Image 1: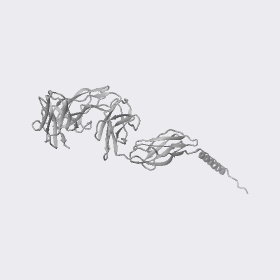
Image 2: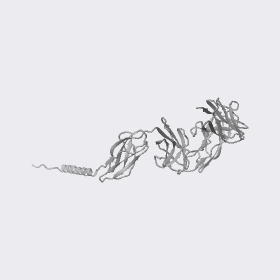
Image 3: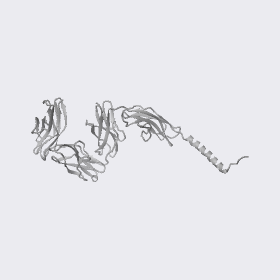
Image 4: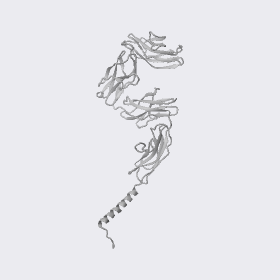
Length: 425
Protein backbone atom coordinates (compact mmCIF):
# COMPACT_ATOMS: atom_id res chain seq x y z
CA UNK A 1 0.00 0.00 0.00
CA UNK A 2 1.43 3.30 -1.03
CA UNK A 3 1.73 5.96 1.66
CA UNK A 4 0.50 9.36 0.64
CA UNK A 5 2.72 12.36 1.20
CA UNK A 6 0.88 15.14 2.93
CA UNK A 7 0.90 18.63 1.43
CA UNK A 8 2.90 19.83 4.50
CA UNK A 9 5.61 17.21 3.87
CA UNK A 10 5.75 18.20 0.23
CA UNK A 11 6.31 21.79 1.32
CA UNK A 12 9.09 20.84 3.76
CA UNK A 13 10.83 18.65 1.19
CA UNK A 14 10.67 21.40 -1.39
CA UNK A 15 12.23 23.84 1.13
CA UNK A 16 15.07 21.40 1.89
CA UNK A 17 15.81 20.84 -1.78
CA UNK A 18 15.76 24.58 -2.46
CA UNK A 19 18.00 25.35 0.49
CA UNK A 20 20.49 22.64 -0.47
CA UNK A 21 20.59 23.90 -4.03
CA UNK A 22 21.07 27.46 -2.85
CA UNK A 23 23.91 26.43 -0.55
CA UNK A 24 25.59 24.55 -3.37
CA UNK A 25 25.18 27.61 -5.58
CA UNK A 26 26.69 29.94 -2.93
CA UNK A 27 29.47 27.45 -2.31
CA UNK A 28 30.40 27.66 -5.95
CA UNK A 29 30.43 31.48 -5.83
CA UNK A 30 32.53 31.73 -2.67
CA UNK A 31 36.05 31.41 -4.03
CA UNK A 32 38.80 32.47 -1.61
CA UNK A 33 41.95 34.15 -2.99
CA UNK A 34 45.19 32.24 -3.04
CA UNK A 35 47.84 34.33 -1.28
CA UNK A 36 51.61 33.77 -1.27
CA UNK A 37 54.18 35.60 0.87
CA UNK A 38 57.55 36.28 -0.77
CA UNK A 39 60.83 35.96 1.17
CA UNK A 40 62.07 39.04 3.03
CA UNK A 41 65.02 40.80 1.36
CA UNK A 42 67.08 44.01 1.72
CA UNK A 43 66.96 43.77 5.51
CA UNK A 44 68.50 46.92 7.04
CA UNK A 45 68.46 48.61 10.45
CA UNK A 46 64.94 50.01 10.16
CA UNK A 47 63.55 48.70 6.88
CA UNK A 48 63.09 45.59 4.79
CA UNK A 49 61.45 44.48 1.52
CA UNK A 50 58.79 41.79 1.21
CA UNK A 51 55.68 41.36 -0.94
CA UNK A 52 53.63 38.56 -2.39
CA UNK A 53 51.19 37.40 -5.04
CA UNK A 54 47.41 37.05 -5.17
CA UNK A 55 45.24 34.93 -7.47
CA UNK A 56 41.49 35.17 -7.02
CA UNK A 57 39.72 32.81 -9.46
CA UNK A 58 37.36 35.57 -10.51
CA UNK A 59 36.59 37.29 -7.22
CA UNK A 60 37.30 40.99 -6.83
CA UNK A 61 40.35 41.83 -4.67
CA UNK A 62 39.66 45.19 -3.03
CA UNK A 63 42.97 45.50 -1.12
CA UNK A 64 46.28 43.69 -0.78
CA UNK A 65 49.62 44.14 0.95
CA UNK A 66 51.60 42.79 3.89
CA UNK A 67 51.17 43.13 7.65
CA UNK A 68 53.90 42.75 10.24
CA UNK A 69 54.53 42.81 13.97
CA UNK A 70 56.87 41.48 16.66
CA UNK A 71 54.36 38.74 17.54
CA UNK A 72 53.99 35.57 15.50
CA UNK A 73 50.60 36.19 13.84
CA UNK A 74 50.37 39.73 12.45
CA UNK A 75 46.94 40.98 11.38
CA UNK A 76 45.45 44.13 9.86
CA UNK A 77 45.45 45.64 13.36
CA UNK A 78 49.25 45.73 13.21
CA UNK A 79 51.49 47.65 10.80
CA UNK A 80 50.44 47.17 7.16
CA UNK A 81 51.19 48.29 3.63
CA UNK A 82 48.57 49.05 0.98
CA UNK A 83 49.82 47.70 -2.33
CA UNK A 84 46.93 48.16 -4.72
CA UNK A 85 44.01 45.96 -5.72
CA UNK A 86 43.36 42.96 -7.96
CA UNK A 87 45.43 39.92 -8.77
CA UNK A 88 49.16 39.68 -9.42
CA UNK A 89 52.49 40.12 -7.69
CA UNK A 90 53.57 43.17 -5.71
CA UNK A 91 56.50 44.46 -3.66
CA UNK A 92 56.11 45.95 -0.17
CA UNK A 93 58.46 48.28 1.71
CA UNK A 94 58.46 47.81 5.46
CA UNK A 95 59.44 51.02 7.26
CA UNK A 96 59.95 52.39 10.77
CA UNK A 97 61.29 49.11 12.11
CA UNK A 98 63.53 48.96 15.17
CA UNK A 99 67.14 47.79 14.86
CA UNK A 100 68.16 44.41 16.27
CA UNK A 101 64.51 43.24 16.48
CA UNK A 102 62.70 40.10 15.31
CA UNK A 103 59.62 40.59 13.12
CA UNK A 104 56.95 38.42 11.52
CA UNK A 105 55.37 39.37 8.20
CA UNK A 106 52.70 37.84 5.95
CA UNK A 107 50.72 38.80 2.86
CA UNK A 108 47.01 39.58 3.01
CA UNK A 109 44.25 39.95 0.41
CA UNK A 110 40.70 41.23 0.92
CA UNK A 111 37.70 40.35 -1.24
CA UNK A 112 34.03 41.12 -0.76
CA UNK A 113 33.58 38.31 1.75
CA UNK A 114 36.75 37.84 3.78
CA UNK A 115 40.44 38.54 4.41
CA UNK A 116 42.93 35.81 3.54
CA UNK A 117 46.53 35.64 4.79
CA UNK A 118 49.60 34.00 3.31
CA UNK A 119 52.25 32.12 5.20
CA UNK A 120 54.34 33.96 7.84
CA UNK A 121 57.98 34.90 7.28
CA UNK A 122 60.37 35.63 10.17
CA UNK A 123 63.32 38.05 9.95
CA UNK A 124 65.59 40.16 12.16
CA UNK A 125 66.77 43.71 11.49
CA UNK A 126 70.45 44.62 11.62
CA UNK A 127 72.15 45.47 14.89
CA UNK A 128 72.85 49.16 15.57
CA UNK A 129 75.16 50.65 18.19
CA UNK A 130 73.06 53.78 18.69
CA UNK A 131 69.44 54.90 18.74
CA UNK A 132 67.63 58.16 17.96
CA UNK A 133 64.55 59.73 19.54
CA UNK A 134 62.45 62.48 17.94
CA UNK A 135 60.99 65.10 20.26
CA UNK A 136 58.18 67.53 19.48
CA UNK A 137 58.55 70.25 16.88
CA UNK A 138 58.25 73.75 18.39
CA UNK A 139 58.37 77.34 17.16
CA UNK A 140 56.44 76.39 14.02
CA UNK A 141 55.72 79.35 11.74
CA UNK A 142 54.36 79.75 8.20
CA UNK A 143 57.28 78.02 6.46
CA UNK A 144 59.71 77.02 9.25
CA UNK A 145 59.92 74.95 12.41
CA UNK A 146 62.47 73.74 14.96
CA UNK A 147 62.76 70.14 16.05
CA UNK A 148 64.76 68.37 18.75
CA UNK A 149 66.38 64.94 18.67
CA UNK A 150 68.34 62.77 21.08
CA UNK A 151 71.15 60.38 20.14
CA UNK A 152 71.72 57.44 22.47
CA UNK A 153 75.09 55.95 21.53
CA UNK A 154 76.84 52.94 23.05
CA UNK A 155 80.48 52.02 23.41
CA UNK A 156 82.92 53.81 21.13
CA UNK A 157 80.38 54.73 18.45
CA UNK A 158 81.30 57.94 16.63
CA UNK A 159 78.33 60.04 15.52
CA UNK A 160 79.24 61.90 12.34
CA UNK A 161 76.09 63.92 11.65
CA UNK A 162 72.73 64.55 13.24
CA UNK A 163 69.66 66.48 12.17
CA UNK A 164 65.96 66.29 11.30
CA UNK A 165 64.04 65.55 8.10
CA UNK A 166 60.40 66.06 7.16
CA UNK A 167 57.85 65.46 4.41
CA UNK A 168 54.11 65.50 3.82
CA UNK A 169 54.14 61.68 4.04
CA UNK A 170 55.11 59.45 6.97
CA UNK A 171 58.69 58.19 7.42
CA UNK A 172 60.68 61.05 5.88
CA UNK A 173 64.38 60.47 5.14
CA UNK A 174 67.38 62.63 4.28
CA UNK A 175 66.25 62.33 0.65
CA UNK A 176 63.38 64.67 1.65
CA UNK A 177 63.60 68.13 3.21
CA UNK A 178 66.25 67.92 5.93
CA UNK A 179 68.39 70.15 8.15
CA UNK A 180 71.69 69.15 9.72
CA UNK A 181 72.39 70.29 13.28
CA UNK A 182 75.59 72.09 14.20
CA UNK A 183 75.36 70.86 17.79
CA UNK A 184 77.44 67.91 19.01
CA UNK A 185 75.56 67.11 22.21
CA UNK A 186 73.37 64.05 22.70
CA UNK A 187 70.34 66.37 22.63
CA UNK A 188 70.33 68.62 19.57
CA UNK A 189 68.14 71.07 17.65
CA UNK A 190 67.79 71.75 13.94
CA UNK A 191 65.70 74.26 11.98
CA UNK A 192 63.65 73.21 8.95
CA UNK A 193 62.73 75.76 6.28
CA UNK A 194 61.03 75.95 2.84
CA UNK A 195 57.83 74.40 4.20
CA UNK A 196 54.32 75.06 2.89
CA UNK A 197 51.91 77.02 5.07
CA UNK A 198 48.87 75.36 6.66
CA UNK A 199 50.14 71.83 5.93
CA UNK A 200 50.53 68.75 8.14
CA UNK A 201 54.09 67.40 8.14
CA UNK A 202 55.89 64.34 9.48
CA UNK A 203 59.34 64.89 11.00
CA UNK A 204 62.02 62.46 12.20
CA UNK A 205 65.36 63.08 13.88
CA UNK A 206 68.31 61.16 12.45
CA UNK A 207 71.98 60.48 13.14
CA UNK A 208 74.73 58.85 11.10
CA UNK A 209 77.83 56.85 11.99
CA UNK A 210 80.48 55.41 9.68
CA UNK A 211 78.22 52.54 8.61
CA UNK A 212 74.64 53.40 9.54
CA UNK A 213 71.92 56.04 9.45
CA UNK A 214 69.26 55.69 12.14
CA UNK A 215 65.94 57.55 12.36
CA UNK A 216 63.66 58.33 15.28
CA UNK A 217 59.89 57.87 15.28
CA UNK A 218 57.49 60.10 13.35
CA UNK A 219 56.31 63.31 14.98
CA UNK A 220 53.45 65.29 13.39
CA UNK A 221 53.22 69.08 13.24
CA UNK A 222 51.22 71.62 11.23
CA UNK A 223 52.56 74.87 9.82
CA UNK A 224 50.73 78.08 10.61
CA UNK A 225 47.88 79.42 8.50
CA UNK A 226 48.60 83.09 9.29
CA UNK A 227 51.86 84.94 9.96
CA UNK A 228 53.07 85.53 13.52
CA UNK A 229 56.59 86.55 14.56
CA UNK A 230 58.47 88.20 17.40
CA UNK A 231 61.83 89.96 17.63
CA UNK A 232 64.63 88.91 19.96
CA UNK A 233 64.51 90.58 23.38
CA UNK A 234 66.68 93.66 23.96
CA UNK A 235 67.88 94.58 27.45
CA UNK A 236 66.83 97.90 28.95
CA UNK A 237 68.22 97.07 32.42
CA UNK A 238 70.10 94.20 34.11
CA UNK A 239 70.99 93.74 37.77
CA UNK A 240 71.79 90.85 40.13
CA UNK A 241 68.24 89.50 40.52
CA UNK A 242 66.17 91.27 37.85
CA UNK A 243 66.32 92.05 34.14
CA UNK A 244 64.03 94.11 31.92
CA UNK A 245 63.79 93.53 28.17
CA UNK A 246 61.66 94.71 25.27
CA UNK A 247 60.52 93.00 22.06
CA UNK A 248 58.16 93.57 19.15
CA UNK A 249 55.34 91.37 17.79
CA UNK A 250 54.14 91.24 14.19
CA UNK A 251 50.87 89.45 13.44
CA UNK A 252 48.38 89.36 10.58
CA UNK A 253 45.64 88.57 13.13
CA UNK A 254 46.60 90.56 16.28
CA UNK A 255 43.18 90.06 17.86
CA UNK A 256 43.90 86.35 18.34
CA UNK A 257 46.97 86.85 20.56
CA UNK A 258 46.50 85.22 23.96
CA UNK A 259 49.78 85.88 25.79
CA UNK A 260 53.32 87.16 25.27
CA UNK A 261 56.49 87.78 27.26
CA UNK A 262 59.86 86.07 27.75
CA UNK A 263 60.84 82.66 29.10
CA UNK A 264 64.16 81.59 30.60
CA UNK A 265 66.15 78.79 32.25
CA UNK A 266 69.76 77.86 33.05
CA UNK A 267 70.02 74.85 30.69
CA UNK A 268 69.21 76.17 27.20
CA UNK A 269 66.32 76.38 24.70
CA UNK A 270 63.73 77.71 27.18
CA UNK A 271 60.01 77.31 26.51
CA UNK A 272 56.84 78.53 28.19
CA UNK A 273 57.04 75.47 30.47
CA UNK A 274 60.06 77.13 32.13
CA UNK A 275 60.10 80.40 34.10
CA UNK A 276 58.31 83.11 32.14
CA UNK A 277 56.61 86.47 32.24
CA UNK A 278 53.09 86.84 30.82
CA UNK A 279 51.92 90.21 29.55
CA UNK A 280 48.58 88.80 28.33
CA UNK A 281 46.95 89.81 25.06
CA UNK A 282 48.19 92.62 22.85
CA UNK A 283 50.74 93.18 20.13
CA UNK A 284 53.41 95.58 18.89
CA UNK A 285 56.28 96.63 21.19
CA UNK A 286 56.21 95.49 24.82
CA UNK A 287 58.46 95.58 27.88
CA UNK A 288 58.65 92.88 30.55
CA UNK A 289 60.71 92.27 33.68
CA UNK A 290 62.20 88.97 34.85
CA UNK A 291 62.39 88.63 38.63
CA UNK A 292 63.74 86.05 41.06
CA UNK A 293 67.03 85.66 39.19
CA UNK A 294 70.18 84.51 40.98
CA UNK A 295 73.23 86.82 41.15
CA UNK A 296 76.23 85.87 39.04
CA UNK A 297 74.27 83.24 37.08
CA UNK A 298 74.15 82.52 33.34
CA UNK A 299 70.64 82.27 31.86
CA UNK A 300 69.12 81.38 28.49
CA UNK A 301 66.19 83.55 27.43
CA UNK A 302 63.89 84.06 24.47
CA UNK A 303 60.77 86.06 23.70
CA UNK A 304 57.48 84.31 22.94
CA UNK A 305 53.97 85.04 21.71
CA UNK A 306 50.96 82.70 21.73
CA UNK A 307 47.77 82.93 19.69
CA UNK A 308 44.97 80.48 18.89
CA UNK A 309 47.21 78.54 16.48
CA UNK A 310 50.58 78.10 18.18
CA UNK A 311 53.42 79.61 20.23
CA UNK A 312 56.22 81.37 18.34
CA UNK A 313 59.64 82.13 19.87
CA UNK A 314 62.54 84.45 19.14
CA UNK A 315 66.07 83.05 19.03
CA UNK A 316 67.74 82.05 22.28
CA UNK A 317 69.86 84.73 23.97
CA UNK A 318 72.44 84.18 26.70
CA UNK A 319 73.05 86.61 29.54
CA UNK A 320 74.64 86.64 32.98
CA UNK A 321 73.31 88.54 35.96
CA UNK A 322 75.57 90.87 37.94
CA UNK A 323 77.34 89.49 40.96
CA UNK A 324 76.34 92.56 42.98
CA UNK A 325 73.43 94.99 42.84
CA UNK A 326 75.39 97.47 40.72
CA UNK A 327 72.70 98.31 38.19
CA UNK A 328 74.07 99.18 34.76
CA UNK A 329 77.20 96.97 34.63
CA UNK A 330 77.78 95.03 31.38
CA UNK A 331 76.97 91.33 30.86
CA UNK A 332 79.53 89.13 29.08
CA UNK A 333 79.42 85.38 28.30
CA UNK A 334 81.79 82.80 26.83
CA UNK A 335 80.01 81.27 23.84
CA UNK A 336 82.60 78.63 22.89
CA UNK A 337 86.33 77.81 22.91
CA UNK A 338 88.86 76.36 20.45
CA UNK A 339 92.35 74.96 21.08
CA UNK A 340 95.39 74.84 18.81
CA UNK A 341 98.59 73.55 20.37
CA UNK A 342 99.25 75.54 23.53
CA UNK A 343 96.81 78.31 22.56
CA UNK A 344 93.16 78.44 23.60
CA UNK A 345 90.81 81.00 22.06
CA UNK A 346 87.72 81.97 24.04
CA UNK A 347 84.92 83.27 21.83
CA UNK A 348 83.04 85.81 23.97
CA UNK A 349 80.19 88.26 23.54
CA UNK A 350 79.09 91.34 25.45
CA UNK A 351 75.35 90.66 25.44
CA UNK A 352 74.48 93.84 27.35
CA UNK A 353 76.55 97.03 27.23
CA UNK A 354 75.01 98.34 30.42
CA UNK A 355 74.08 101.90 31.25
CA UNK A 356 77.16 103.29 29.46
CA UNK A 357 79.62 102.21 26.82
CA UNK A 358 82.12 99.43 27.60
CA UNK A 359 85.57 100.95 28.03
CA UNK A 360 87.64 97.84 28.74
CA UNK A 361 87.35 94.07 28.31
CA UNK A 362 89.53 90.99 28.57
CA UNK A 363 90.11 88.12 30.99
CA UNK A 364 91.52 87.30 34.40
CA UNK A 365 93.28 83.98 34.89
CA UNK A 366 94.22 82.24 38.15
CA UNK A 367 94.79 78.85 39.76
CA UNK A 368 91.83 79.61 42.03
CA UNK A 369 88.15 79.67 40.99
CA UNK A 370 86.39 82.88 39.94
CA UNK A 371 89.42 85.09 39.24
CA UNK A 372 88.76 88.83 39.29
CA UNK A 373 90.63 92.12 39.22
CA UNK A 374 91.60 91.75 42.89
CA UNK A 375 92.63 88.08 42.60
CA UNK A 376 94.50 86.96 39.50
CA UNK A 377 97.86 85.69 38.36
CA UNK A 378 97.59 86.79 34.75
CA UNK A 379 95.45 89.27 32.87
CA UNK A 380 94.79 90.48 29.35
CA UNK A 381 92.91 93.71 28.77
CA UNK A 382 91.92 95.77 25.77
CA UNK A 383 90.26 99.16 25.49
CA UNK A 384 87.17 99.82 23.42
CA UNK A 385 83.52 98.83 23.16
CA UNK A 386 83.71 95.72 20.97
CA UNK A 387 80.86 93.26 21.68
CA UNK A 388 82.36 90.18 19.96
CA UNK A 389 85.70 89.20 21.49
CA UNK A 390 88.26 86.47 20.80
CA UNK A 391 90.44 86.17 23.90
CA UNK A 392 93.75 84.31 23.51
CA UNK A 393 95.13 82.16 26.36
CA UNK A 394 98.60 80.65 26.44
CA UNK A 395 98.37 77.47 28.49
CA UNK A 396 102.09 76.76 28.95
CA UNK A 397 102.21 78.43 32.35
CA UNK A 398 103.23 75.39 34.40
CA UNK A 399 99.93 74.75 36.20
CA UNK A 400 97.74 71.67 35.90
CA UNK A 401 94.43 73.56 36.28
CA UNK A 402 93.64 77.20 35.56
CA UNK A 403 90.43 79.23 35.83
CA UNK A 404 89.60 82.01 33.37
CA UNK A 405 86.83 84.61 33.40
CA UNK A 406 86.11 87.15 30.71
CA UNK A 407 85.14 90.63 31.87
CA UNK A 408 83.71 93.86 30.48
CA UNK A 409 83.82 97.21 32.31
CA UNK A 410 81.88 100.45 31.94
CA UNK A 411 81.31 103.46 34.22
CA UNK A 412 78.78 101.56 36.33
CA UNK A 413 80.95 98.53 37.09
CA UNK A 414 82.39 95.25 35.81
CA UNK A 415 80.54 92.20 34.57
CA UNK A 416 82.10 88.73 34.53
CA UNK A 417 81.46 85.53 32.59
CA UNK A 418 81.27 82.07 34.11
CA UNK A 419 84.65 80.47 34.76
CA UNK A 420 86.32 78.58 31.94
CA UNK A 421 88.32 75.72 33.45
CA UNK A 422 91.43 74.40 31.64
CA UNK A 423 93.09 71.18 32.78
CA UNK A 424 96.48 70.36 31.27
CA UNK A 425 96.85 66.97 29.59
